[in-house]
Amino acid sequence: MRRTYTSECLGMLRKGFSGAESVKTNYSQAFQDIFTLSVLNGKRNGCYVEIGGWHGTSDSNTYLLETLFDWIGFAVEWNPEYVERYNVVRKNRCLCLNALTIDYEEIFQEMRFPSQIDYLQVDISPAKNTLEALKRQPFEKRRYSVITFETDAYMYGKGPKEEAKSLLLSLGYELLAEDVKILGNPFEDWYVDPEVVGWEAVHNLRSHGLECSDCVVDSAMSQESKKTCASMAVGTNKQISFVDDGWEEMP
Image 1 (cartoon, rainbow, N blue to C red):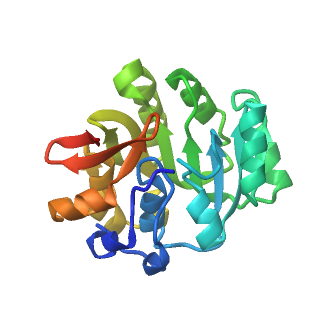
Image 2: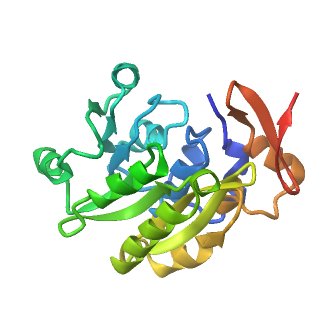
């Protein structure tokens, strides 16, 4: 399991949130759960849509939201093995469906989702599929307070990233954290609905090209605290730590 945040980071958050003192660790690969809670001020009883369910706990952007902040929602995952594993460890369900063909609005209506959905994760592979899943969202009927969109721009180029950016900006979303990095590789863009989160949050958390930890935790923290807050497992359970110019593997 990856550990990207500990309680020692509490006083270093770029934007504190209600309930932050109860967070002992998180589960996202790159602080997406802490970012979402920061933007929404620790909202409880929120709702999410998780496109790309994967493990259910490790590298999960929604496990913390569900278990500690009582969110509801669902994941979409095409691999039945992942779906089965997810549904063993989670209360909220993972649906074994094709993210590129399903009718999201139909599911939202069945689950009685509000018109303003708190969090949308779009994270499948390759990047062109992530883009197509984004395009299938019923934007004419629903809005999303926070969107994390995996671009994998370092791998697939900026085509899908720029098309997604054009779409979301045209719909009034604000690109709050652009080219979020892991190991120096830009892999995600994080958007918000500024009418919901407020311009103060947009101002305090705006970034471009930062390592994922620095998007939510003050970059002026001590070197030792960065190591504590950003201990992660990469690939086959390797450990990395934060250094001045990014991340490095630990023996």
